[in-house]
Image 1: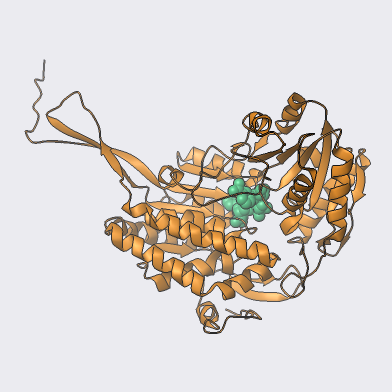
Image 2: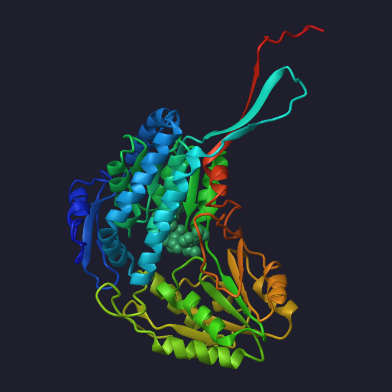
Length: 494
Ligand code: NAD
C-alpha cells in the first residue's frame, strides 16, 4: 500500500508504523485514495474490503474466539497492558496520522491519545474482576450461579471524528472480556481508526484471528451488521445511519448498541460566571471545528446576560486562527470534506434567511469555515433543530429557569448538557432535569472519561452505554448455571 510517511516522528519510533503499513491489506476490493482535508494532498492509497472479505473476517473471528475466551484472565490482561505500552511508545506516529487524516488540532489529538490509552488500561482491569455470583434457589440442594460469558464476535463500526478512542472503547473491552472483533472504521481514517489497532494488538501478542479491520462504507458496514457470525453490533455514527443499522439488526434479533448524534444544550443562568461560561461555550462549539457528537449545539442564555455572552463569543470567534493545524500555529483546522461543509453552510444560510442574526463568521475559505455565532435564533430554525457538526454557536434567550429547561429539552436528541450558575443547588436542580445521558454543572458538554457509562437518550442512541461497569453489559451476556451432586429424578407421568 502506498502511504505518505508522517512528516515528524519521534526518535526511536520512526518507521515502525510505516513498515506495518507497507504490508497492510485491509481488503481485496478496489483501492481508495485518502486525502488530507487541510491540504487536499494524497495521504495513502488503501484497498477497501468486499462483502466476501467481511464474511471471511467474521468466520475467522468466530473460529478464534472460543480459545481466547478460555485463556486465563491474567494472560488476557497482560496483552491489553502491553497494547497500551506499544500505543504509548508510538504516539508520535499515530498522532501525525490523526492530525493529517482528521484535521485535528494538536490539543485535540493529544486528548484523544490520552483517552485511547485510558480505554485500554481500563479494559485491562476487566478480566480480573468477578464475573458472576451465587444466587439463592428454591432448591437448596443445588448450587445456583449466574455468570457473565462473552458474546462471541463483536462487529464495531466507527466514525472518522475521533477514530482511535471511538474504536478503542469497543475493541479493548470486547477483547478483554473474551470476544473477537471485526472493526470497520470510516474510510477517511484508515490508519488511526484501523491500522493502529491491528499494528498495536499484533505486536502486543494478541492471538491470530481475534481482531480484523475491514475498510469500506455503508455496504461493508451493513455486511458486518448482517453477517451470521457477528453476535453483537456496536455502532457509533449519525442518527440516520444508526436507524438503518438498528432496523437491520432488529430484523435478525441481533443485539445492537447505537451511539448517535447530539444537539446539546448549554444553559447560562443570570448568576453564572460569565467569563467562564463564554469560554466554555466557545470551546464546546468551536474546538475541532465543532465536529464532536457532544459539542454544544444550542446556547440557552438568560436575557439579562445574553448581550454580553454573545459579545464574548463573537470576540473569541473573531480571534480564532484557521489553518493547517498539523503544520501551522493555528486554533482550528478544516471541515472534514465538501459534503459536510455544504451541510454546515446550508444550515447557517437557511437560519439567517429565517431571521437569525449573523453576529460572527458565516464565511469560509475552501474547507476552512470561520467560527460562527448566530444570535436571535428561534425554535423553528435549522440551527436550532439540526445537529450542525460544524463550528457554529446558535444562541437563544430565556427568562425563567423553567423556560430554560423546556428549551434544553426541546430536541429529539439527548446526549449531553451543561448548566452554568453561581448557585450549585440551582444549577444541579436544572441539570438533573435535562433529558440527556450526561449533564454537568459549571462545565460544558464535551466531557468524557473511560470509567463512566457514556451514552445518550432519545435519538442519540438506543440506551446502550460505553465505559466502566457498562462494558460488562455491552460485551458479555448472562448465563445461569445450576449444579447438583445427586442427579434429580422427576415423578412423571404424574
Ligand atoms: P456516519 O453515520 O455517516 O458514519 C459512521 C460510520 O458508519 C462510518 O464508518 C460509516 O462508513 C458507517 N456507515 C454509514 N452508513 C452505514 C450503514 N447503512 N450501515 C453500516 N455502517 C454505515 O457518521 P459520520 O457523519 O461519519 O459521523 C458523524 C456522526 O457521528 C455525527 O452525527 C456524530 O454526532 C456521531 N457521533 C456520535 C458519537 C457518540 O458517541 N454518540 C461519537 C462520535 C460521532
